Image (tube, rainbow, N blue to C red; front, side):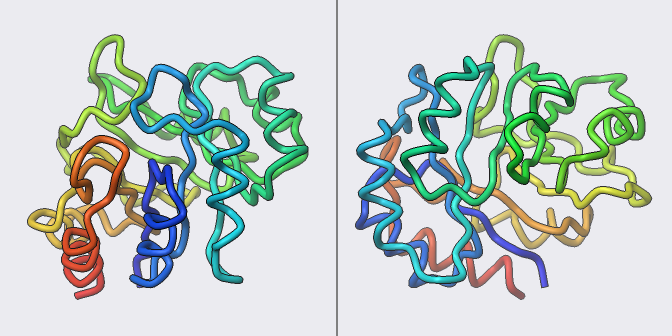
Length: 203
């Protein structure tokens, strides 16, 4: 069954909604320009209400080493998501499982990327939009995702309840990642949208 990550969680209430819906993971955005950015204090508050088997993911975009270490020291983070231009060596240096986000730009060779980031637990495939590291709310051409990758694929980019079943049928990903597609407003989730997304993703 396809796993489901709900990213951009900013409050305990939204974290509880994600857990209650059966989400496998929640994402916390440590990227100040994002409307879904959380401080370490906010993150600790959110993480305190997670259920035992819900994975906590910390998202960084070209962050400084000290910033990442501060988060890892103070918050109970299970997995790091690197969403910028971080090198494989940098990603592996925190001694923590990580996934590497890849923006699906024309001409990108995913086989080369997976060789470069062979130590990653998976590749998160997102929509390419110049100057925007993620959270575009737009899909990309799912047919461009090869089915013979060695690393697990986490599919992101413009997923909503109405297209997630089709996306899963085309890509056959290990997991899907949704943020804006289940929001009432930027940074706040909508219970009914989460329920509908989860139902359609599990069909």
